[in-house]
Image (tube, rainbow, N blue to C red):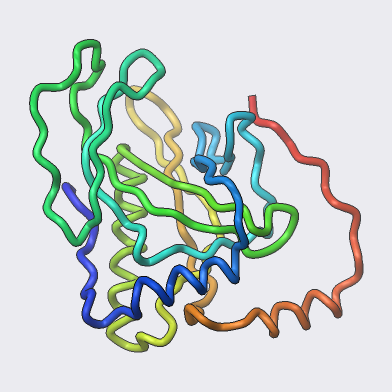
Length: 211
């Protein structure tokens, strides 16, 4: 797979309205990197903090990108990413020291909508087969949703994982973006606020750091 699903821009709401809606859902915050680690846990940030089990994340349908990345020894040597509505970018020879040369990468951004991490905005990128497959599946689901109801193009997902056994590397985990519901870009969270008001108050959970 070289790219994720192209979205019909003529059917999607405006970028301006999406930006306004995501700000209302997420609020201002710094972007962090989020990933499904080798143990199947979802973590984010430099400290590899685990997400909460019941956290939900709104995916920005205009944020899907594809392109190439070149990794050195534990560091990014070069990266060229563009919107999926554009062709894959042109690349020359891989930078010196790139362990695998240029690798195809896909990605998107999402924002936590509840719990301890509410308002956190994150970037997810993948070069693995499982990661790219999960992003592509989510992109296809958004495209199908827009065809059915373009008033609710934003998927709210639960971040999960699945695994398979590799003959050489053993148990390999891959991400799953489990769509819980679809929301509009200018919808308020009145329903969620009402549910939160009815729920008993709980102490904030201690954050766990993955080693």
